[in-house]
Image: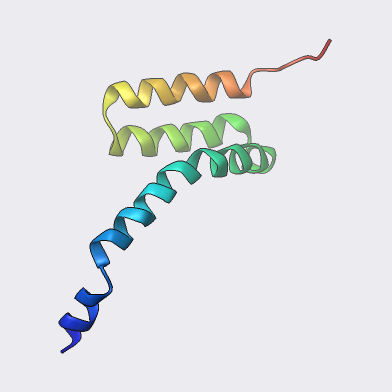
Length: 80
């Protein structure tokens, strides 16, 4: 039976592992994706697209926090 074969492979444990790794890999991906896509499409456009998506899927408080993170990440930094 297909269901028994599927169930023998511990699908719920495997889905939890995938979710765990996904949560911790997203910030690293954003660190790479935002500057590269910002170079081609402009930092403001990329930030706005990300904020629109985040605000439509997550709570208001979370979207405000991510907005502040994006603003701080695109500020000009100088070295001394």
